[in-house]
Figure 1: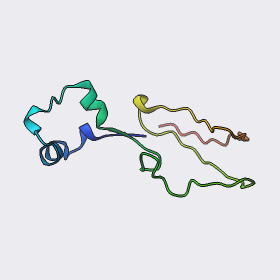
Figure 2: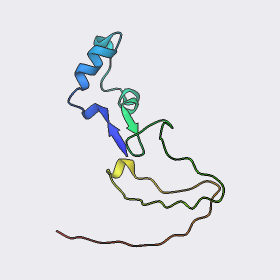
Figure 3: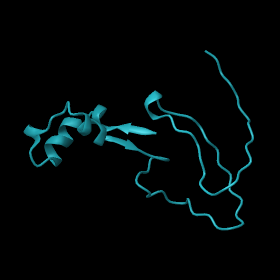
Figure 4: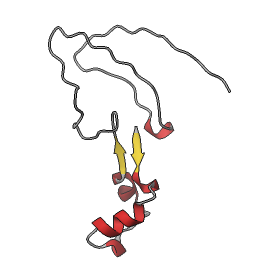
Amino acid sequence: MIFDENKSWYFEENVNTYSSDPNNIDRNDEQFDLSNQMHAINGRMFGNNQGLTFHVGDEVNWYLIGMGSESDLHTVHFHGHSFEYTVRALGSFI
């Protein structure tokens, strides 16, 4: 999921507090905008997830859910591992 810090209620406060020169920040710069979009798994970023350690022979179950928007769609892939795919889905309509 992508957490877009550009949309945070605290965005201006954070820029003013943590930037060495907040008046020269180009808030319309695409790279600046992208630098404030945080990609996460379970709310954690940059490989600091806890509890994702497995050992040879371990049976691991993953329960996946799609959340977010069209800008943060991701396909699931597991490097170097085989897996069994079972579909159990419930649909809801409003």
